[in-house]
Image 1 (cartoon, one colour):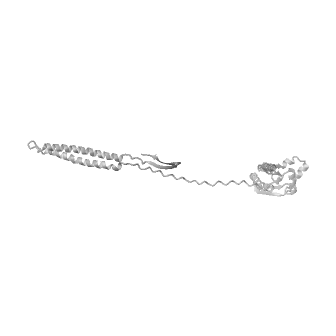
Image 2 (cartoon, helix red, strand yellow):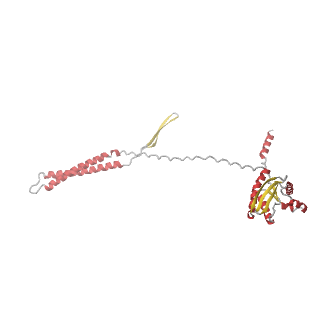
Image 3 (tube, one colour):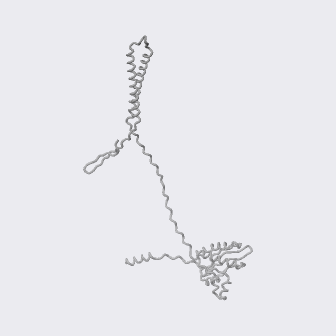
Length: 303
């Protein structure tokens, strides 16, 4: 049972797809060309046959059939009334085609009356026709092409059914929403720590005070030098001139020392204020529980 089922499934999967229907066959019958020159008729018939072949039809021309027939059989085909069903059936039987096409090519005072009529060969019934009146000779081929474009699709639908619908295209995938990534805010650098800056005012203040003290001693030394230089004379020397000179030298020395210490205090304060600071230490504590105990640690950069 399983073997027969497997064989049936195998044959079903290997069955060929249905073959497309064969192309339509059409006989290009003698035209209805009253008053048209023979060279125009011949050229128009050749153009109609080429247009039918270009549209995928199998074309048989009446000239290909009549040249093989005797005169007694040729004459009825060429002279029959090509609007009568009996004539159409005889033409279709001679050409062994499904369709018979009759070209309209009558010359009138207003121009050519062009077009095409197409019949079913088995019963001579008219399938469709397309006629264009008042066509000039230079537009003759274009009008015939227009008529062929009109009658061929109708005939194919009548004998072969409507053409298969084109495969539906798959709908395009929905558009992918593009979310624009926002730039991350820059990480702020921590302010460096300057532990000496907050104490820089102490040596600076001391330097200013010492500079003031040195100025006082400098003025005292200048005053004593002025008294020694102007007040005393050789006839009336100053009293205690030696003590005054010693006091002036001491005041001058103290002013120099105070100026030096004051300058050193100002420089020390400036250096303490301008020294580069250090980044704060990034230390992160961590703890973990392990079998049999625990673990505590620090990770980061120590200053």
